[in-house]
Each structure stands twice: as structure tokens, then as C-alpha cells.
Length: 385
Image 1 (tube, rainbow, N blue to C red):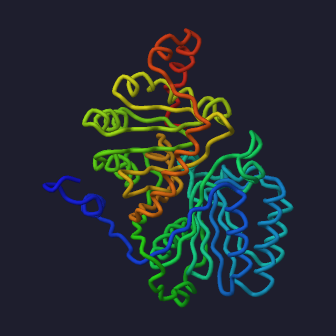
Image 2 (image 1 turned 180 degrees about the vertical axis):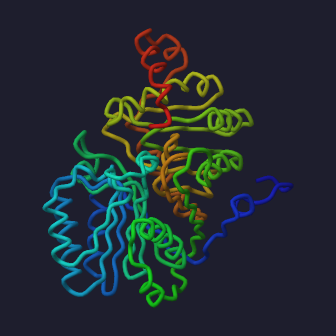
Image 3 (image 1 turned 90 degrees about the horizontal axis):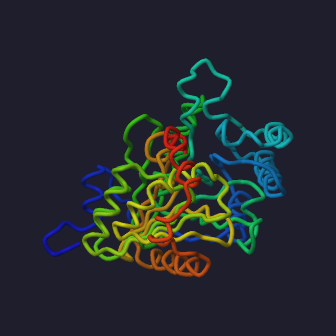
């Protein structure tokens, strides 16, 4: 920020009304090869409690390994609470649920699809949270499925990032779990006796921003707009699903117009949601004409959800830069004020650029009529993407 303007943390605290937690450590985990061992090690080391919330729990060896690890700790007397989104985790095998419940894991479904409350069916929890003993937290983009295994070496191994957090901010992350847990009928009365005092673990300052499924605006929407507003030199966005509304497009174009280097990295040919991709592509021309740099990642499916600003701040967690995350689903974002961590994320962005193609404005203007018709056809459904 300039000498006449408030610093970035103050802007985020003042306009979101959410303070930063001081004294945290945050570790960047790149791809399943780093993410899954770290999460499974934490689960196996649990002594008191495990709280696990995910949108995606599909199939594959990793799905079995997680179920068995959670079941093992439950048999050892650890209180294990698992919350699954009833839409996102539909492909999960019943045998994995049985493995956990028979061992004593408390498994619950968030907003079951078979409900008389039909108005809740389209509002999901997209949060991805693991809390161990109330002291170690994980969040980010990863789902529990074979697609995330490996090191993004080819199209069968998705590119993603996840994060391990220790320190006082774990309380904020745990609160995001418990909000969904309570709605799903989970027991809350015994939890007040198991809140550890979390000591300083590092130098990172973290802000935990939760949003709740709605039909209009959320704190995550405000956060994304503010990240664009406070950027002075560089704004980088890597997101799996990009369906910006007019307001987000204008914020990005405004940032580019005041001299900020705005770079957006999106899935290319290996996107797992082509209809979502088409809905977002309708906004490419306005962004490109406004000076925004758009790149398509062509090595495999890109599933990261990361924003960095000026090498100083990052936004990580579950939200994508799409209308579902901004207005429709429960999300949790973590703002990271720690230049060393942001430098790692910017380095990963630079490495990923080597596998990207530039979206050229002139070439985009010449795209075929079929492409344009498909983009238009997706617009009535863009809130679903």
C-alpha cells in the first residue's frame, strides 16, 4: 500500500471484521505425494480427537487408506468425527462408511439429498478441513480420491495444494468444522472440555474467513474483491473453476488498469468440468481487453485455489473464483500474512507457468461460432458452476 493508505492487514481486518491470529506455522504441501502422507501421519498420531470434513470423498486406494486410518484411531479410543457432503461424496463406497462406523467413528452427512428441505439441496459445504487433537489443522483444495494421488506427472494425477497449520489459528479452522458439524446434528456438549491452549508456533499471521451458503453475498466474496483492491504490484490467481460475476471482472480489470500485473491460471484441456469452463470463458474477452493475463494449465487438471498479492499476502483454502464459492456454498478461506510462505506459492506458480499456454486476445476474438454459442448457452446456469 502507499504511505497514505492503510496496510493490507488493516484493510482486511477493518472491512471484514475478522482479526488475524498471530504466531502460527503454515507448511505448504504440493500434490498428493506430499499432502496425503502428512494428513495420514497426523491422523495416526492422534491421541484425543480427529475432526474431518470434506466435500470430495470418492474412490481409490487413498479412500481406503483414510477410512482405515480413521477407523484405527477410533478403535484406540480417539473421538473421531467425520462429516461428508452428501452431494460431493456420493461416489464413496458404502463399505468405507461401514469400516468407519463399525469401529466407532461418528459419520454424518451434510444436508442429505433425501430431505423435505428442498431449498437446501443446492447449497453445499465445500470446506475441506482436518483437525487433530485441536492442535494441528489442514485445509486447501485436496479431495480424498485417486485423482489426487501422485505428483501431477500426467493427466491421471491432479495438481493441487494443501496446507498444514499449527498455532492459535487452528481454533478458527476448527470453528469452521464445528459450524457444519452442529448443523448436521453432531454432539457439541462434550467439546467445551477439550479446547487446548494453543501456544505460538511460528511467525505467520492468519485470518480465517468463513462463508455460509446463501443466495447473494458472503465474506468470501468480499475477501476476493478486497484482494484485488489492495494489490499494488502483482495479483496472481490459480483456481480450478473460474466463473466470475461482473463485479469480480471489474475488480480485476481495475487492478490491471492501475498498473498491477494480474495473472490468472486456469485448467486447460484437462478440466474435469467443461460446462463450468465454458461459463467462465464468456468473460475472457473483457478480461483480456482490460489487460489481464490468462493462462491455461495443460499438464493435467489444475485444482489449486490460491491467490497471492504483492509477495506479501496469500488467500488459500477451499474457495474457487466462481459463483458457487462466492454466493452459494459453505467455504473456508485462510489469509496468510507471511512473505516466506507467499514466496513458496509464487515459486510454485512460476513452475506451473512452464506447463501453461497463453490465452491470446486476437486469437480469442477469432474463436468459432460453436464455442460462442456454447458459452452463451451456459449463462443461465452459471450460479451452479
